Length: 289
Image 1 (cartoon, rainbow, N blue to C red):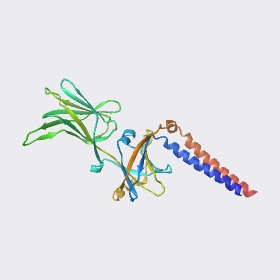
Image 2 (cartoon, rainbow, N blue to C red):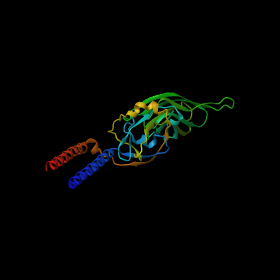
Image 3 (cartoon, helix red, strand yellow):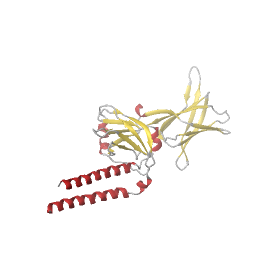
């Protein structure tokens, strides 16, 4: 009987190792990850996404996954499009200026696909110039997003200024082009391009024995998950949430072979069935002896 027990124990250990291998195999479909630093004593934790996540994740963020220490997926929900200052960030963006006969063309590199709410154009002098703002989509097709005027008048008694371009909905395209009409005036001296952009918040529940947690992203084949927690987000938003931080980004070569071929998953399930039948066979044989 002890021999039977030892055999069954070995089989169960092999099955456990196989489950870990299968879970790790699935995670290799993602190209990047960040460790989540857990703080505070409240059960619900929140993280605000950073530039590296936006640069490497899918645009709709459907490939985001939170994974615990046991390589199990952790349910979460995402809050988008909030006007609160907690969701707003500002940063300078790299740009290139090109002057033509009558226009100044500013090409802005939004390489991280930030969700930009407004662009501040820092220029020298007094002026009033009309502009047209375009974005280039993935097909390199220019799309007109907005037109208007940028101006400054430095009167001591009544200064006037508006050099900010705001958008009714965020833009996130990689290339943004501002075409300023100079007419017969000299080109303006562009000193700085500053963008205000919004970030998204992920909320999940910490559970004992599941730390550390890791955020995975960067899988073009992944689809948006559906979790029960998202059905209660309004109630959870009323609760205190601890602010957790994302660590440095770890990159790995995602396995497209595993994404496009599910032999490992089906093979593992077949092994479980075969082992189950083997255990039943051994037990029946022992009972008949």
